[in-house]
Amino acid sequence: MSGTMNFGGVANFTTATHSTITVGATSTAVVSKKQKRKYLILQNISNEPISIKIGSAAVANQGVMLSADSTGGATPSGDGGVYEMSPAFGNLFHESVNAICASGSKSLLVTEGE
Picture 1 (cartoon, rainbow, N blue to C red):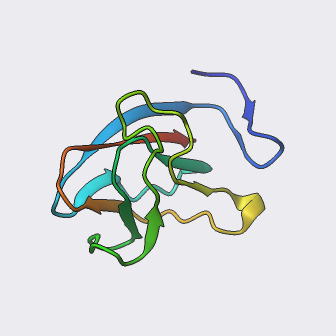
Picture 2 (cartoon, rainbow, N blue to C red):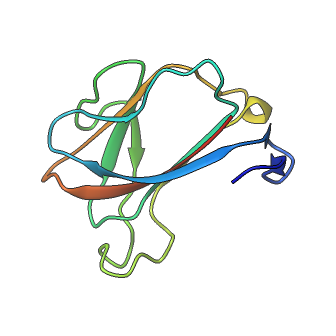
């Protein structure tokens, strides 16, 4: 995507990258350290919680916990845990983000704006 995008007035960016990351039972890289980052949103669409850590390896049940999607991941309902980074929220970090889950092979949606 290109052009200026604005998510509810919280972030202005010109390029959005969308991906689905398969999170493992060991720390899994979600996004790398990036000074150009202007926005980031992570959403758990799987059937178990996912823990994320900013700037270091993810450890189960530490950092930010994204709750499981209520449908068990079969047909994601969109109500799985969400973590959003934006300058408007005062929580925009440029460090790497890593994730971990109990059983592995769980899906995390990622949208990063530059």
